[in-house]
Image (cartoon, rainbow, N blue to C red; front, side):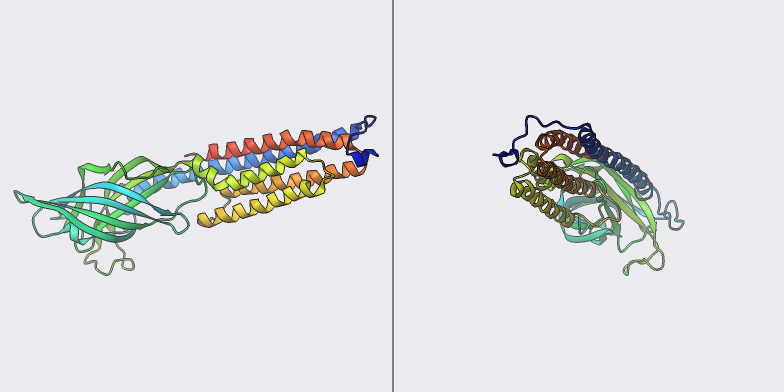
Length: 370
């Protein structure tokens, strides 16, 4: 029986210096690939994080503090009835990242003097739609009126998928009266401001911060709502900063991809001459990784830049492709009766691929965290 038929290394076979150099260059090239893509990914994700913080600070200054910057508005409307507002968030959920919307259930309370206005009946959600509103309580004490409404609303909001699922999201709800402009009534934040119910959020999310504020908004001639009787309106805003449990979501999103890469690494323990399992497993893993990529794309909104999920999918696909290239080279060594070199090549590549892939897939999510 020949060495090729037995698939065993020839004890007299020696690995040339040239072969060692080739194997070393291959291993160095694989590690260089992971190093370069890791550095590029880290730099890009850090840039995304900086851009998010800058945009959020600008948004916070515009939406949660002061007046709209579109046109000058009066600092204090004349003869406006102050309306103190309190919000209790009962639930947020039903997120659709791709469609850019989420639902909320909250109780909103109004306290004011006089009977010229009815803020509970005439408010609207500026950045969404009110699905239902129901008056739950009403009383008048010494001319001061108090009303509490339960509101279900659907909020339209675009989500940035650049660092998902390790970035937080600022969920904003803007309340505005549709019948009375700022010269008639103005919202004020009550002492209680905003409260968060015990069951407001599911187990997959956590609220890190909450804010309330008021602002004056000046409608231009083109964006004024049909029911508006004036130009300057008072708005009450509350925002929740929500952070998903990134590690759990990350694992669920990419479990098929990670399994595919693991299968691709198993082939290093199969002799290259066993062509069907050696190459069949790698090809199957490659198409499974493509399927996982398609699945992830259907979950997230389209983005005009390379996102964290794009990076993870790309690294997985390239890793599987490189294992197939390695198998082809190792098979060539066997065909030229260099069995010991083939075995050495396989044994070296397994820890190289495993280390490079594991480090990059740990580093990128870690950097992505808000």
